[in-house]
Length: 274
Image 1 (tube, rainbow, N blue to C red):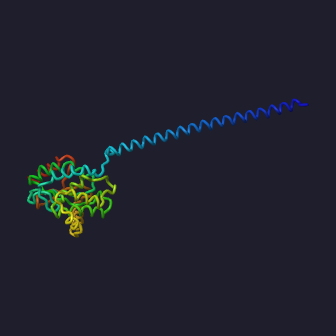
Image 2 (tube, rainbow, N blue to C red):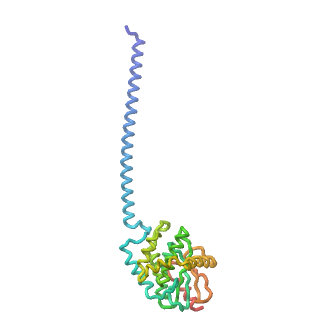
């Protein structure tokens, strides 16, 4: 026969079992809810990843905004035509563009991989060529100064490639093509294939002669002496410029813009009047 104490103990055990069951159920429900949340987050993450991939693909397809790369093969004839239109018919002699007897000389220190030099090439330079060089008032001498190119050997190789074209009076065609087709800085785009492709675009350039000229020690010495001349002038960046009466004393040209020719026009006019 059960006692009151036994009944109370049975009730207590039953309550504990019910409480434990309720707690387990609560935990199971919480775990289920957590699993649903994790699933939703995973699905959301997948959707976000897909959207990001699509955005990246669109950016790459549209040219990546401000980033630039080496032009596509279909664009090269147009670039070559623009360069020929700019410098074609103007006398060239080695690294010099313009009449050798021009009254004013502008020395242009540049690195072919320098994006700021490219700004000058596409900005103020065409106006100077049309206004002063083509008319015989100004000649421009291009000199090498390593600033943007990461590897010294790459710098020497690319600058010599341009100087080798100068052996056939085509250096300015080559450097203009280089700047017009310049790739993303530090991307390693300057390869032998890239240099060869530029040479193939230069009208009238004998590729066999150009290849042979690239091993000429005189050209390597020119790159070194250009760097020394830049150091003597106190230049540490590109582009940098010296200007003066041909055969006379050269002085630094302080420009206010590389895309607008006004400060260059002023310096050239002053040199003419000196």
